[in-house]
Length: 113
Image: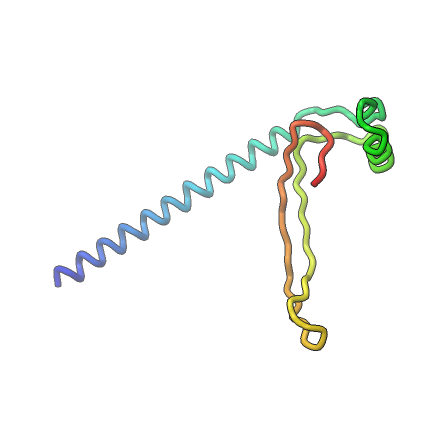
């Protein structure tokens, strides 16, 4: 009977420890997201071709083509992606949903992976 009590107390202690650990992790995660959101809210100006004047010509063409002058620049971007991926064969395609949320932070305004 003593062993049963020891087991129950140990299990209860382990469960409570895991709950506290998880709550601490969630709190830390929320603080990190808040910090990134606050960083992204700061004023970073707008895009102009003068920002890329010192870059190599291919990079200048790329940025000047993809970013319109006057576009608001940001240091933090939350990018949400989703879709489906086929994991089977042509005869038996096993389509599975896939998705990802990426928080991209760069010290400069221009970024891309």
